[in-house]
Amino acid sequence: MTDRTTRRRLLALGGTALATTLAGCGGDGGNGGDGGDGGGDGGDGGSDGDDGGDATPTPTPTPVEPDRTIAVDPDGSLRFDPTEVTVSTGATVQWTWESDFHTVTVESQPEGENWNGTGEETHDEGYTHVHTFSTAGTYEYFCQPHRGQGMVGTLTVE
Image (cartoon, rainbow, N blue to C red; front, side, top):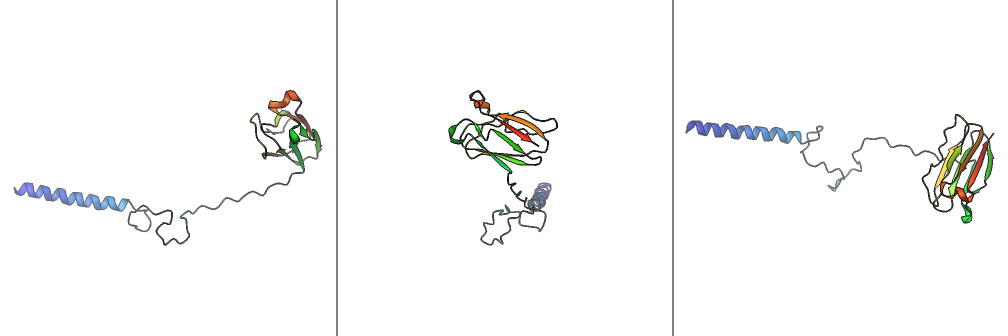
């Protein structure tokens, strides 16, 4: 019986040591905390205002004031207004949607330019598309769903 008692005692001591070791692994590794859930929302009533994050906030980019604005379908007219625009190299142009279900799809542009327009994805009233044009030349674009109704535009960059 002595072997049995000793074996039980050894297992009990081993289990206690293991439990103690594992309890230490549950902490945050920093201040020897109690292994709790961390209370990341400061819900313990004693919040010091720190949300626990060390990340540097990302600065909000300053909006670029457009040199020229083109209305997309003003008054339900199925056109860009103005239809033909001339700007200087480096100008920023903004298209502003005044109704729903339109695109600014690039048909042609000078070699070396990387303007993608909005592609074929339609957008609704209030949406804006902004691009700064750095290459001189002629840019032709259209509204994908309304091209057949003559909703096309030309931008010339000098």
